[in-house]
Amino acid sequence: MEYYKLNSLYIEVTHACNQHCRHCYLDGGIHHKNAEMTTDQIKKIFSEFKAQGGRYVIFTGGEPLMRSDMFELLDCLEALHLRFTFASNSFGMNKERLERLASYRGLEEYFTSILGADAEKHKAIAGKDSFDAALNAIRFFDKKGIPTFVQVTLANDYIEDMENILKLFVDFQNCSVKITPIASLGCKSAEEKELNKDLIVPKERFDYFHEKLDALCEKYPNCVGDDNVLTHEQIEESIAEYSEHPLYSLCYGSVCVRPNGDLSFSYNMINPITFGKAYESIKIPMDEKFFDYIGLLKKADEKVLADSEKTAVEYDTEIDRYINSVLG
Image (cartoon, rainbow, N blue to C red; front, side):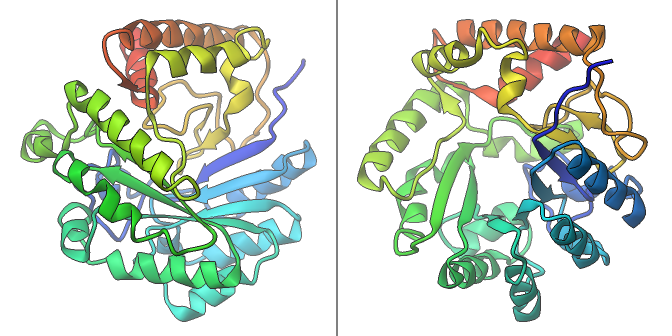
């Protein structure tokens, strides 16, 4: 049996979180308190990943700082000489934790989030006063020469604040920013969706968002990274890059491990297609199920490409929405 070769691994070590972001598809961990692998199970995954040629790990949650064994797990990555990105909302970061994290030779990037142009606007979305902690972490790693990546998940009312948000980061030397509109409230209850619906950027504003962000990319070319809202032409170009590849878009993605061990190819929202439990084996057979999934990805791309003829679309969200609709 031939197995899919894993080059990069996206692992969610917990769904627990010390924030309660209004738009979070995990609802701040409320629905997933018991879905967490043991220390030894995660170490086994890292060892198997390394043994089959794996090279890069995205270490995230929920909030990884919620685990008492977090540094023990990072020690394991270091011992295996695996490069990694560490993702945190920064709310639980203190000087000791920042210094210890920066000491790892394998740390390639620190990933954090800002949800508004100032502390008050950020707290209105995050539910906690974590704005200054995030900026402090970015400042710390910038001085260390360690790249940081800032995710700005933008509420509808904050679109006009995009430039003010970017101005927070232009003086940093090792910082890039990705701005993505809130296009869905994920798996929240009907009541919570209704309470938070004001956050959602409607599709009819995607073109405006895209034009505004394009202008900022020209103005701050060394600061702004790719966003998730794509035009028809951009999606068409992206599809052309891997349309003839036998593994289609999987060649551009990471394999994801959920806190309960579910192994999948999606780390955008919740992918209902799994390929077993990672703590049992991270080997994914290239069998009928595998290639059926690749076929589903192709159909999803065709659907999203067609939708984008009318307006720009939030690509990852629409792909997940299509997969879920097909599977019922």
